[in-house]
Image 1 (cartoon, rainbow, N blue to C red):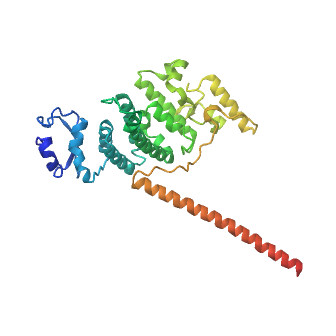
Image 2 (tube, helix red, strand yellow):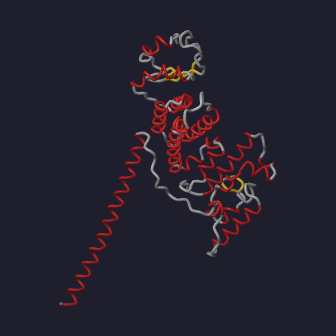
Length: 353
């Protein structure tokens, strides 16, 4: 690719290029330096941009092109742009990236997007260093508050997509690469639409093994205290109280050690759950388990945030469905009252005739 003089030629050449170039090194001097950084090239069909990690040069190169629609057509490119938008605190580009990610969101890529958002948020909070103190406390809030708000909106839509396709997504190997907060946030959801809690238990078991491998540990050889340190609240994510007693006490569940034998629960915990299941099976009153372990999961009615045409259509369809259901309910009630009234008049006429 020919050397491009950022100051003189980039605005003229941007329209003619047919790729996006993301540079990983900042430009030292816009006046004198040419673009010698080794770029990461992502194939792209139209409306390119040349992006440096330096905020000033990024804005000089890209801002004039906001008059041209930016059409990001793949998830990897959108995530690359997202990271640059966060580091440069460019609100317009961040909104474009989030719109693209939301529009492409599906069960196959939702874990990639969801985990990357967590990494971006963590990196933002750890690495952000203001170049100068804000003039006021309000300025400090306004300068960055919109970033977690936008990231929170797309994370919300990701979680709704996971809820609806829980069986498929929980058996995807990519879920084992999630961080502890991310996987806990998914598995603790009341609206996670799993066909059985054994799938959740299997996910917890496999994630724990993978996490131990990342720590160069062997889960089977860990002490009970060390196991608790790895698992933390994830041990209580499966709703054990929704299992049958035989399922909970079985030696194997889907080719894995069952909850009683895996070491995920200590003896006090599994004995208390066993007692709950025994009393429940006999129809006796028993106190619910802690950590919502006996609470049924529900089908949520929360709508996605309107971020793209995809989420907009989902909201529209859900609102339309709710309206039809409401109209049908009102019609049923009206029909019921009409029948009662007709029957009343019939009886009245029969009596006085």
